[in-house]
Length: 249
Ligand SMILES: [Zn+2]
Image (cartoon, rainbow, N blue to C red; front, side, top):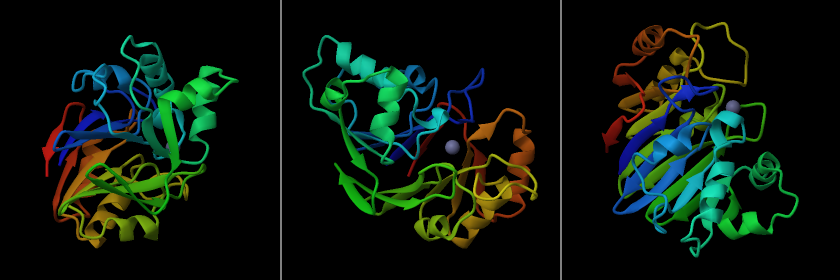
């Protein structure tokens, strides 16, 4: 399984990175974790979207703009591309994903959207191609999920946006990579919103994860402080995500 970071900017894109988007590949199959603003362009450095088999699925952790809004642009790409005779793309996400994407696009008739996307609600354990996708509810102000992707004996856990919660720790148990958000620094942060770097490190440590990738890096934080705080609470390998980062696991 290969992870490619398409975008890792937290809350909004910055000059160097789109918002949240991660490409997961295995044996010719591909899925996306989130498609935040600015990600669709950068994604095409790694993937030819015109190819009908380009993607097996998109998994949306939640419908905040920095995690889902380029789905409206992906709809445009699929709907108007000359080779638009492909099957609907599976979209696993929260129950409001279909309505939220339609609202962004200003659609009142949802038939064309349903022709392009096969919306399914994230729920328990689901299979897409070779990927086993397990989701648990996240602690965030909207319907949101943390997601684990397993292929054979390899696994990656993506926090999405979440405050610290037991479900994430259980989901990450024994995973190869924890792709965890680190939106906050320090310890005095609002509950049920985001992880701090130290929260991410503690959960990764408690889950027995060896490799922590810190993401959702917010413009007003010092990234090196984020990394230092995580390293102070984590004995494994902790790194900062960056656009174009590739990890084979
Ligand atoms: Zn969010």
